[in-house]
Image (tube, rainbow, N blue to C red):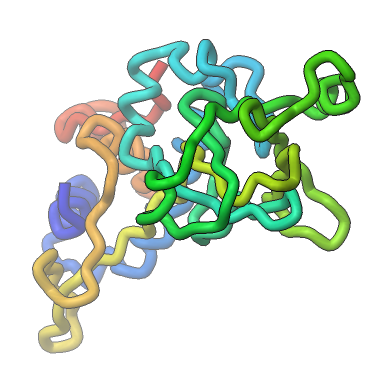
Amino acid sequence: MTSEEFIRTVCAIADKSTYGLVKKGDVEHFYQIAQMALVEFLIGSYSGYAPGRPIPPVHAEATHRVDLALAPFRQTAVFTVVNGRGDMNQHGDFLYGPFAEGASAASGHCGDSEFDKLARVPLAWAMDSEWNDLTVSEIDMPTLSKPLARMAHLRGGPKWGFQVMPSQVGAIEATYLRKPSRMVIGGTYQSGLFIPDSSAPGNIDPEWSDVEIRHIMGRVVILMGMNLDDSALKEYGIMEKEPS
């Protein structure tokens, strides 16, 4: 669904023939609130999940439905490691994770395009409660061929920092959930009234599938104070509750 289709549908639900009566800024503002509420709900579906901690594969794939909903925001990237430390928000869009499966590490520093040229090895993620035991073990110490990482907000470090052992690891690749983009409704003003046009410069369409968009739209309608009965919502396929 485009941003133009989104605001036109909201206007139709509100039975407003003039777009000026449904403010563009209000729709964008409440859209952001609604989409982040949906993200939080879907993230909560990962059993045993704790923000800023690796998500075990069995939990990440707990429901195919949740996985599909969050698929547009699943991002894999390379992160630089210096002296055993790195920043999971290095690319400026980190939201949740990292996922435990599929991570890899390499010695040597490189950019995304160079990472695949290095000798890569699987990277294991540990919880804080496991870290001490796993890093002091004389039998199974982390090595360059079997490195270990954890999310760690270390003193003087970034909010979403991580730690890797051994410290000679120069880069890792990990999958995480990025922040959804804000919707920006493109358009023009005619006689003081805003006319939506998703092809206008600066327009940013929603990134969700149509199923999730209808959940978001239902929340936007409520947040905007539109007192509608169930029949009005059902007419447009709008859902007030999050998916189960």
